[in-house]
Image 1 (cartoon, rainbow, N blue to C red):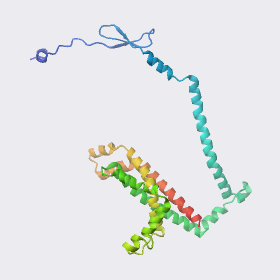
Image 2 (cartoon, rainbow, N blue to C red; image 1 turned 180 degrees about the vertical axis):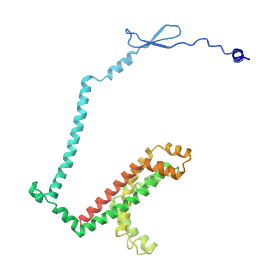
Image 3 (tube, helix red, strand yellow; image 1 turned 120 degrees about the horizontal axis):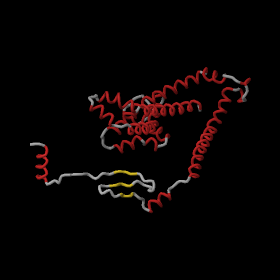
Image 4 (tube, rainbow, N blue to C red; image 1 turned 135 degrees about the horizontal axis):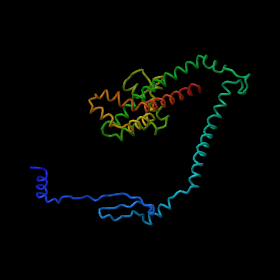
Length: 289
């Protein structure tokens, strides 16, 4: 049986009429018409026109050339104005601080230039001890917060655990409660006469000292770091992990080769925010003594 006989058998079986020709759709240009027109199998032109309602709408939202020029002038002007305002409010106080730091009496003159203030600051034993304590507390808090919050945000974005809304609200509670309330709660729970340390565990350990400061700073910085890492992990395309798993990569390799590099900027941002917050507050606490 050849192809022609097979086709005739199929047409008789399904009663399909053979297709002899297809309509040809051609676009033609015409200088007298604003839009192209289409010719079908009959050869008659079908003109594409716009309705009066569409024409009125187009005219209503048409932007004039003058308006375009005004917008082109306003955007750079506002940007420059905002930039100059920010520079003024940032550089003016900074210039006063720099004059007090590098010039005697705060008077700007070449003869008054000195580094005595920095020498005095870095040669004082109390100042060096405060600087070391601040760095110790800041680095320890940054490492603890970054590790805890990364896995917490990972569980909130990459797993199917129940109660995600509850856990999200729990991690954001330190933002609602004032700092004095959190400090009193830690003292009542872990102080020298605390409920947990003195009555339940009956231990001599208490919240006072560097350990207590680190614990309180961790509780303070958890929600701020969570917002950054949760947003970062939510924005990363999870299909990258699925593609790596489909290619035979182990879960550990997917985590170290795909997940961590994808979230590295969020991890760095959360760590930098935590370090700056802790170091600033700790240095200010030493200066107010």
